Amino acid sequence: SAAPEGTVLKGLNYIKDRADPIALEDKAYPEWLWSLLDEKKQKQKTSKPANRQFHRKQNRESIKASNFMKDKKN
Image 1 (tube, rainbow, N blue to C red):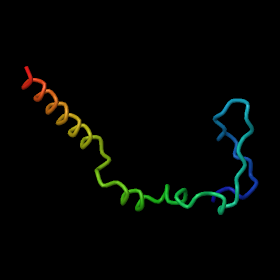
Image 2: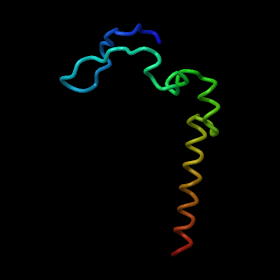
Image 3: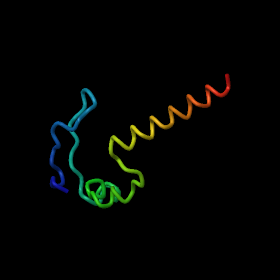
């Protein structure tokens, strides 16, 4: 990790009236944590594109389908 074991990690505390967390040794953290910053592994996990245009198009199509079905019921 970037911080040696025992280093106080200032500014990472998000709970009021609590002490700042202290860095642990690398073995104390779960294995999946180290793959979070690896871009290749993250891209392999997502099968759908993560761009805004794709999601807007998907959302628009689902709204149109929903409205179409509502119109058919009346």
